[in-house]
Image (cartoon, rainbow, N blue to C red; front, side, top):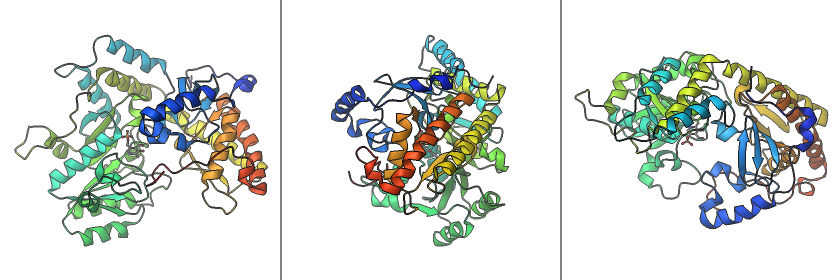
Length: 453
Ligand SMILES: Cc1ncc(COP(=O)(O)O)c(C=O)c1O
């Protein structure tokens, strides 16, 4: 069986969605008084959604969620792409619950830490060692420190075309929101372009012998040009730098062994998170033994303080990780993601065609990890039209900042979504013709990274 949950089926679509978000708005006001930005993750904030949207999700099951006002939605986005199997996925919840009853944190390691490392290294055989953390940022920060220590260099090069790597200063200092990051730190992070070896060569020429590592997602919306990743690895090694793949999104979604398996290029270090534990807090830094072992003490070099936090090895997160990775091992999760993503992509294309908005609304990326491009009358990305599209989908029972499918999205869920998209795009066409302000309730969405208000 594919998804584990009963879909409500098309006949139930009438009860999906809603326009009354009053209880959520009331709680939202309290949240903003106590929590800067009203949420603990910027990507979940009010400014990322139209005004006519649920402010809080009270619960989720499979790919369905319910807000505080009792409105039900088919959800895409799935915990910022971490919930690959579906909300409250029984195998994962049961494993975490069972483990929790035996205690979650001890004064010495729990045996489950070894089991979790074994499961991970079985799935990602290109890695020789692994160390776990809580967030993807932890893993990336560990990779950067390790690379700097291993090479004795300060500069790092990151891909300018990939939007997010870490919450740490080495990355945040390069964004449009760098407040609080010292100039010295900002100056040590350089940028190159994807599929552009010359741009990386230029950085090596500019800072000879000073770049510790090159960090990129193996692929995002753009696929690697033939030989690009191989040549990038060769270029890095020729200049004494390490190659780091950020597999936060591609890991366990593009392939259960990561995009490094898809492209047959093994990086020196790679980072995983999100899909590794179906929404539980677990991330991983993996890579070559010779580099990774600097974080241990079986060597004569100076030691590196690699990932080490009080909650790093929380046992129920490990149990969730094991259950999730075993599900990838035992069931064709990734095949399901590709199939449902393809069904959705085709449906969006048909709907865009029939509403006359081709070129304005378009799916981008691999079927297993779709996002959508939204363009206004001038053909440029538009936050007003993005808000309108989300608003109309929400009204019809689809909550979708992206079209990220999960193992729990059934055919009926996808078909109901396509129906909602079709109806929403009719409104979109009218807004293109008559002006978006006539249809959008309230303010547009804003970019998450912005320096002011
Ligand atoms: C590609 C990529 N790398 C790293 C991260 C950081 O992960 P986390 O938010 O778990 O710290 C993210 C988060 O969205 C990401 O998308």
